Structure formats: C-alpha cells, structure tokens
Amino acid sequence: MPTYDLPKAVDLFTEQVNIANNLWTVYVAATFTAAGFGTTLEQSTFAARAAITLGFWAFTLGHLHLLRQALGILKTVGAAIERAAQAAPTTPAQPSEFTDVLLHLAKTANRPRTSVAIHLLIDCCVTVAIWAPYLRS
Image (cartoon, rainbow, N blue to C red):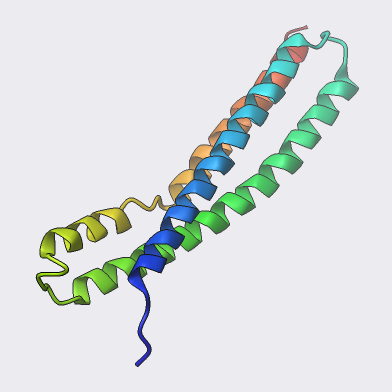
C-alpha cells in the first residue's frame, strides 16, 4: 500500500484555500465594477448595457467554473486529510491534539453547491443593477 505525505496534503489544501480566496477577491472587484457601470451609464444606452451584461456573464461563468474546480479539489483533499488523520496512530511525536486540528482543518472546506448558489445570486443582482436604470426610463 502506498504511503502519502500528510504535510504535503495540508500544503495542497492551504494552496487551494488561497486560490479560492483569490478567485473571490477578483470576483468582488468585477461585480462591483459591472454594477457600477449600470448606475453610471446614460439611460438610453441599450447596446452598452447589453455588452456589459454579456461580458459580465462570460466572465462570471468562467470564474464560476474555476471556483468550482478549486472547491472540488479542496473538498477532495480535505476528505483525504480527514481519513489520514483518523487512521493515524497517536504517538508522542504526533499527539491526538494535532489529529483534532487536522480534522478541524479538513472540515473547513466549503461545499461547492453553496458557493455556486451564492455566486449565481450575486450574478443576478449585478444584472439587475446594470439594467434597473434603463428599465425605469
């Protein structure tokens, strides 16, 4: 049976957390920018709003794919860490408190389904923000 390097798995987990956080940071900037365009454009610019909406949705669907990918990897690595931590024997060099930390860490991986739902809700809100001034006229 092959052996796996738990510290490297934890490093991979941390890397995936950082990737997901960076993706959310970029997403926040893009959504506020797109929503801001909606409030600053003149009311008669249908073509501009359509282009912004199309560009925003192209970006957001690509972003959502990357986010789901990062979160999927995170959940997989978290589950592997959890299994390894539960199977590891408790020794003086690796006390049970460390196992508890690993188990807690593994459980922090967000479910992709929750993030997708939040993402799509924000996407719809941005779309409304882009079009609301135009629709009021």
